[in-house]
Length: 123
Image (tube, rainbow, N blue to C red; front, side, top):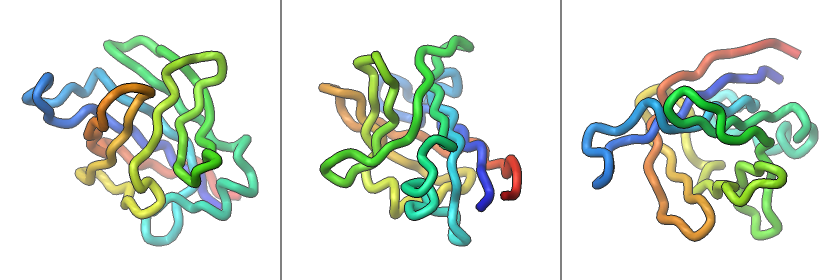
């Protein structure tokens, strides 16, 4: 199983017509051979995942990727109200230039562009 560093940056939307590379998430997780979230590996070793929420060069929260009771993938930030829920994360391809959608509690779905995918290690 190979861990990957994946950087998601806010894509173009009404409030950010050019997107915002300073607003996003860094994920450390495993991907399968099709560059999709490797659900069996993540469920077997959730402690290996990491999620960092950043804005304007500052780390806002650090947590893990978990699977919610409803089956959706959650960017879980313990002690924070800023958990984000992924929209169909399991079927998305994590390759540069692709888009994924995330929503914070009570907020709308927002598009994020995959800006970086980099292998970290081989285990």
